[in-house]
Image 1 (cartoon, rainbow, N blue to C red):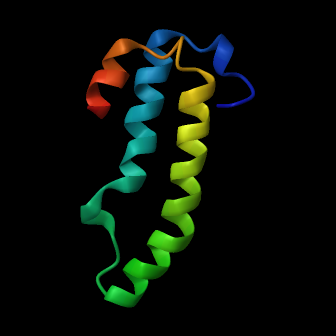
Image 2 (image 1 turned 45 degrees about the vertical axis):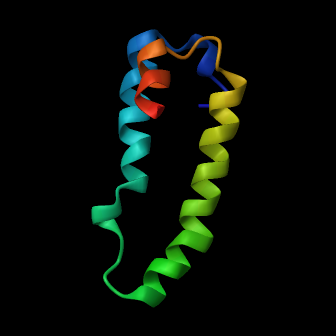
Length: 71
């Protein structure tokens, strides 16, 4: 995403963020509290930083519909 984002079409951004945001779906979290804490401090944390970095880098080309979904 970071390397080739400038060549993505508007529809690609929409589809991509629809897939990526599934990472943060609460229903997919592990059942035990220990697993949830571990997931939040590892995978979730790293993924969130990466998505924010991509979003910041390509804010001007990301479709408005993706931005509206975040609010």
